[in-house]
Amino acid sequence: MSRGKKPLLENVEIKKIAAEGKSIAYVDEKVLFVPNTVPGDIVDVQVTRKRKSFMEGFIVNFRKYSDIRTEPFCAHFGVCGGCKWQNLPYQQQTEFKQQEVIDNLERIGKVELRDIAPIIGSPKTTYYRNKLEFTFCNKRFLTREEIAEGNDLNRTPAVGFHVPGLFDKVIDINKCYLQAEPSNAIRNFIREYTLARGLNFYDIREQAGFLRTLIIRTSSTGEVMVIVTFGREDRETREALLHALVEQFPEITSLMYVINEKMNDTITDQEVVCFHGQDHIFEQMEDLKFKIGPKSFYQTNSEQAYNLYAKTRELAGLTGKEIVYDLYTGTGTIANFIARDAQKVIGIEYVPEAIEDAKINSALNGIDNTSFYAGDMKDVLNEEFIARHGRPDVIITDPPRAGMHKDVVDTILKAAPERIVYVSCNSATQARDLNLMDSDYKVMGVQAVDMFPHTHHVENIVLLQRR
Picture 1 (cartoon, rainbow, N blue to C red):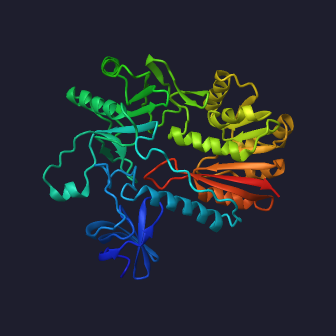
Picture 2: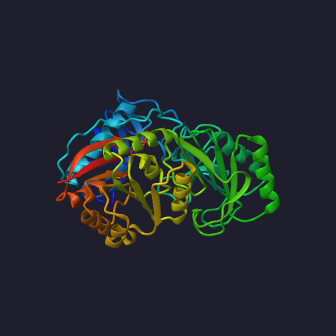
Picture 3: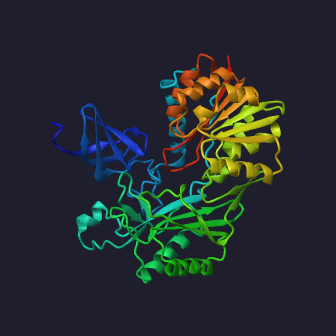
């Protein structure tokens, strides 16, 4: 087959699961990636991309369904990119995630693994998220099936999720199984209210429109935060909508809004105004309370966040005498969670607002042995900083998906803590960093934690002991 042609492949048997919610088949000695399939499916595939060693395509027909396939529970499955593994039993999902972690640590990290614990599965596989962000769009996304049928191509406005890989396409979501009520009710009410009054949704290409994004946060304490972002100010119309929300949903603890006239949707650099209630909600973990503001980071699966932090604390092996550095501390959740088991905890984080939240959370819980510092990790964490605050006995690090900068790794090695607990949302970059530390540290424990059922994402904790 030449590269220019895009063939239709018939009777293709799916062999195994791959990353990012796709599965793998083999055709003419090439790997074929096909989404929305599971091992054992036999399908006809339209190839959309062809390279020397692999192809990609989409299903045009099922010849046979796999015996392990489960029926997706969401009407938006296959279009929305949020829960790509609904058709795969949860047991198989966690088995694949566990194996992916092991493969990355061995293949990329080239480290010797000890004490690989079974993955900690999520108690909830639906309605497990405490935060969702929706986008308003003036024209909803049309699926291939809708276009092929040609019956009703009405491009009505949408409020929902972006189509994976398409920045200007938004799927109109009726019911989402990721977040418990009143999440769906709030989103659908806003849609009905605004469309009935002719309010315009945002045009992503033209960068114009009134309604732009919607963030809904819920907490284990039962509180609800709603943040509506508008593309321009129209005080009378905005206040009417917000008042309607307060009247319809008295359970909203914090109703806030943003006027965002810039090119991107992020609100971290925007003023967030409290319209009703308080400017925060609370999360609770054991006997600790954590204040969550509109810009605060908090793990989006509250129950699994507790399991993640409890296992991190256990692996740290604290006796009450240790100086602990918590790198990439965010709002200080881990730092405050472990503080009562340490002599003192030093938290470092890039975002100044997060550091202020961390300090507030310490004060809120009567914790007086923490201190927090804001700045770029590779600039803050240096020999002078360590000399001033004390050489760490334990370092806990929870970096973003990109992992740690090499300068940070070098400083950790110079600090020479007895133990390092490395928490990661990307085991590939975690493995890369472990390889850099392998000459000085050996892996003593591995614990995967599934924070996001029906997706390929997985958190992983590695315990390192100084050689």
